[in-house]
Image (cartoon, rainbow, N blue to C red; front, side, top):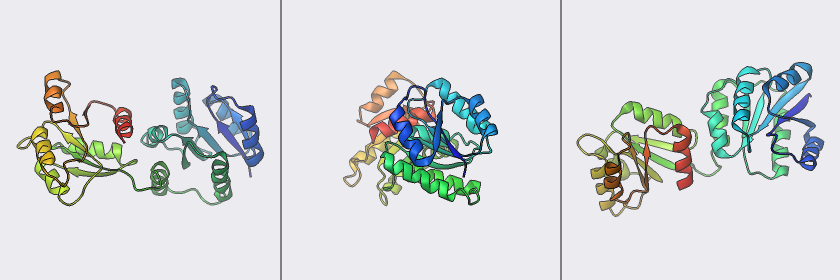
Length: 262
């Protein structure tokens, strides 16, 4: 069995912790630098690379992406907070990422996770479909994921939102305000992302109908809008939604706003 290469931010220096991890799983530590990691992989017998995502700088993030896309001969474990794990999951990288470990986690539990992985490394690597299943299972908390209903008349927007949200949440979609009301008669999601501008029954009218029904009037709603217009936002907020999100916001901002709400 080869060695374990543990990559972490240069801002995280803890000799005692390093020694404890080294004693348990035979790892050695390096800074997050693609060229140095490549040299280490080419020079030594490395079975696994662990990348700890806590406190990584923008430069180190860039190096991590280069490592994952450029060094494909060694499997990886990524450890970090949920949002950080999601960034690399949605990037659709080609690296063999065997496990996503969500932190914070007890050191003893973390070490046991790594030991189990090392024991299984003699087996063949999972195929791409299995990797996706593992990724989703490890990123999402053990309890049932939050359920989000996305309401939008634009099919491209629905597909895009679903792709962004699916790794972390259970996602349902409705193509109109009327379809959303029909859905709510059967299921109660944890959050509704409601397009503001829709034909026939727009976001304001849909929210009014939601608030008028005793069974689901308390379901939280975020407006989705493609227009950053102060008057429009003021009008929308008069119905007291939990907030609004611009459609132009990137995946990271969207996820962070939803995570912050929950």
